[in-house]
Length: 282
Image 1: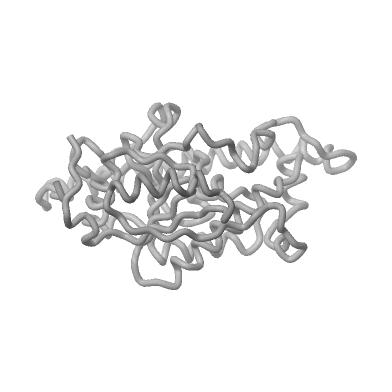
Image 2: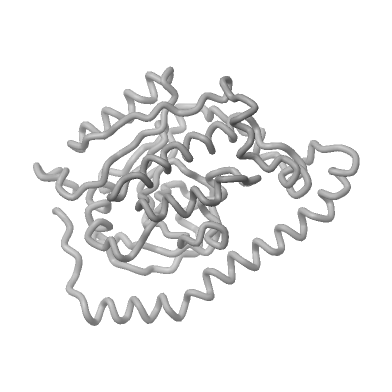
């Protein structure tokens, strides 16, 4: 059961939507849903891949990407990274948490309720990503904080991609911005790598936000191909470097997840013993 109280905006974060200025249908589709929730929001014009300059590419560690991944980032991935950096800079300059959405996201009707519940637990997180795909539901997650209505703030054992919906504090934004000074990693992948960002791989279960399959990706699906496109020495180095990178990342992923297990379990025990249940807006 879902309701939309008249005071829904109370203590609600700002909402920033990353969207190309020409994406009229995407904007209207998401705007209708947020208006239906009774929420205010701002559009932020995304960086267009067709307008990238040499200066824009200065953020990109091309050599590392080609050696360790066997191919370049696509222009759309660079534009996406720059767009989220622009959003993070805006968040970092404020004194309150913000929700950042991409314009092709579809939100659960319970999503506003869960945001309220998270805002009542602001000491528990700096960065929370929202997923809603079937794959997310099967990923190993440790329940940390009950949010009501059978929702939980969780720690994820994997490092999933996806930057379509997240809640972030100014301090969290500043930590990600430090990683975006010079990087070879797509923004959605970086967000799932706590060993780089210093932020927990936190999400909410069950899922609340999915990408709208009605709209094709501006980046395209070619980026998911595993076949290397480099040649010569770079291609040779890739076959040695890539397996090593994947091994290290798997160790770090598992290390962060299982390494936090004792403190997570103890924190949950103390929290349940010392605190009354969370009562977000009904």
